[in-house]
Length: 409
Ligand SMILES: C=C(O[C@H]1C=CC=C(C(=O)O)[C@@H]1O)C(=O)O
Image (cartoon, rainbow, N blue to C red):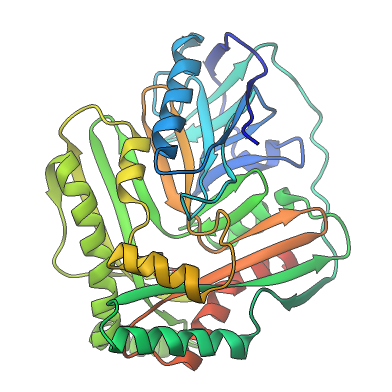
C-alpha cells in the first residue's frame, strides 16, 4: 500500500543557529531516531512532519524527487543558516531492488545538525521539547541463521564462481543475513552511540529501523560538487601493525581484489560521466583501514554539468558494482536467483536531502533492520572467478562484526 502523508501542510520551517550541541546523538529523545553522523558531524532528527512510502519500480527516484519538490515548494521556510542540511531535510532509505517495496522518505519535525564548527536546529511547526530518556541496553543477544546457513551460503558462492568462470558475468556481490534476538527491546540509540564511537570514519545512520555504520559514500552533493568513495576488495585486520601492513600489501598485490575494485570504480565512472562537466578518477586505489577490515578505496570527485539534485545522482549510480556486480543486469539476475533472500534496504541508498537538492547518501552496508527485540544483520562480498567460498564466508563474518558490536558492546 502506498502511503504518503504530510502531517503538517504547508510545512512551516525555521532554522536557527545554536550553540555547539557536541554529541548530537545524546540529544535524541525517542526510540525512532533519524541519524547521519561521521566524525561527530552530521544531522540527527526526530518526530515526523511528512513521510512517504516510495512506490517500487523503475521511476522510484523520480517519484521521490517530485514528492519532495511539491512538499518543499509549498513550505514556508525561514532559514537563518543557509548551509547544506539547513532548512527542511528529508532522510531516506531505498530498497536494494527497485521492484521491492519498503523505500521511505521522512521529513523529521526537528533536526539538530553540526558541520564545520557551526550548529543549527530546524523545527517544523510548533517546536517540541521532549525529555531525553537514556537509551536502554538490549541485554543478552542470541544469534540464529538467516535465510541460508554458512555451508549453504558457501555452496551458493561456489555456484556464482562457476557462472563467472562460464562467462555468464564478471562479478557478483552475494550477501547473507543473520538473525539476532535481544533480551529486551532494541533501542536504536544504544546501537548508534556504539557505532559512532567505534567507527568514526564511517557514516552512522538510522532511518526507520535500518541502523548501521557504512564506510561507503555513494555521493556527497554540495552545489555542483560531488564526491564518492568507492570501496571493493577487502582483507581483515591483523593482530598488530606489522600484520596489518602485510595484509594491506597482500590486498594491493591481489589481482582478484584489484579487478573486483576496478569493476566498482568503472560502474561509478560510467554512471557519473554523463552527469558531469568534470570528473576525476584516480588511477590507483588507496587503503581505508577500519577497526574490523581494510578496503581498497577510490575517492572520485566531480562537478555536475547542471543543477541535478543528489537524488538524481543516486538514481544514476545505484546499484554500483560494489553491491551489484558486472554487468549490472546479469548480476541482479544472479543475486535474485542465488541469494534466496530479500535484501530489503540493505545495500540500497541511505542518506538525506535538503530543499536545495544537496545531500549525502551512502550505501547501506554494515547494518541491520531492527524491530522490537529482533534484528536482521546483513553482510556481502564481491565474488570473482577466483573467489574461495570459505574466504568469502570469513570476510562476511568480519563485516557482521560491526553490528554484532553495536548490539553487544
Ligand atoms: C557488500 C558489502 O561490502 C562491499 C563494500 C566494500 C567491500 C566489498 C568487498 O570487498 O566485497 C563489498 O563490495 C558489505 O559490507 O555487505
